[in-house]
Length: 51
Image (cartoon, rainbow, N blue to C red; front, side):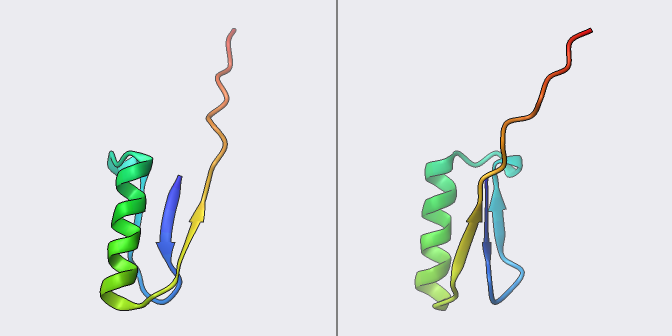
């Protein structure tokens, strides 16, 4: 999961140790502070290969 701003370099993702709820809260705060549009990208879970 990744959320990013369409007008600037702001972004947050689960790779940054945010839960989905925390990332959403951060995205809302960014929107309220800047008025910038936020989009999100949900990546599929990683594929685990077993030998």
